[in-house]
Length: 484
Image (cartoon, rainbow, N blue to C red; front, side, top):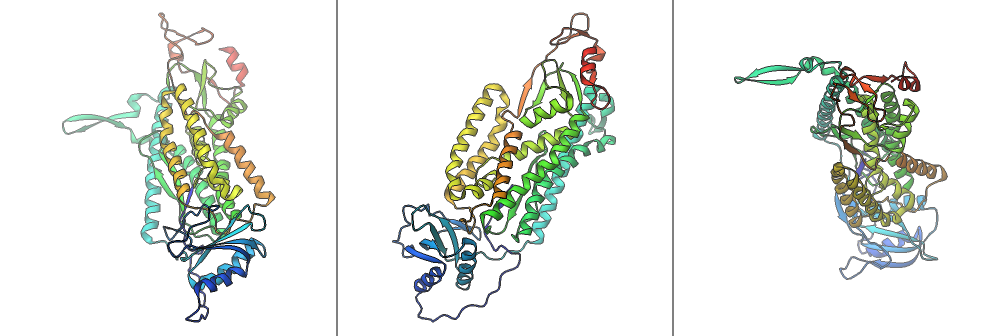
């Protein structure tokens, strides 16, 4: 994800020599002349005297400039005399000496399809402070520790489940203040690295995708801010970069917005597939937290493991790599929700322009319906609360401010439209309607000390309770199951 504040689109301030102006020159007359150089003016609106009102056909929302919401002072409507891109470059050069800025917008009126909004303020250069970069690295380190801890505890759970290690090996007693505490045996500290490195590769790749494409388009941006989540089963709430400049046009906006999730998915999918291939399939004899299925995740299990799990009797006990891939895709899916400053909202804005804001509340309603359905399936529907609050806040922000591009008229070219379609397909494939469920015991110990299988009622000895029946590298799935 990336957020945006409006300052100069370059790392260094742009220095231009001021034009010579007559002291008695009428500012509006001069502005009208500048605008007329690129627009055949049909209507104009002066909002500077406190009595002028924005036209009814215009949303007239404030635009964020220098971390403040600023309203336009003049609005002109007409038809551009040349391409929007060239017209904007020309008008911006005329307005810069007067510390004014323009926004180009579309309008549906015949003969007057274009709108130019003038602001009496321009973005100012802001350079990254050393303290800010320190914060980037501190948050990264805290996130590394957080996800490493999640990976280590995940391995402990896996090792106990598979009988690889015993509780006595995983924990050791430490005397303190006359009492004894059981703590993790830190000799296994490195066991948390597979998850930590995998999830950081996915999230870091996502944010660096935004970062390098923004730099390619000469849009000033911050380094990624990672967000640690010390308590939980994920270890992080993702990462975010801060764009320090308004984006020039919708094509640049799409390039930056698409780069993050595309890179993240390209890293997450191989990690997920490798993780599934090295995970184990076991009898479902214990209740616990079960990850939800997206279309991609369900298909991956069928393709790699031979059938869909859980199948009522058996389930795949995913390892750290598979868990990292699943979490990475979940975070990416949440970020692709088409609302406001999320990547999905940016992509929607790049594709539809100003019309995109009309779809934010309908999308929020659809998500509320998904949450309601999830609540009928699992008590863990509460995991939706934080994302829903975030999405609702973003939708509200979009109703208060215009967070589009400077020149919002130029449509996407056919290649970029294909990228929009591709991202929409990816979103459908990786979205998880029910992220987590809790299951109860699916097999109970019999009176003779054996465990009855859920579906086949074939006896399993107590020692084989967590017996691995499938290894994707060495055993064909169908033969192994038929032997059980």
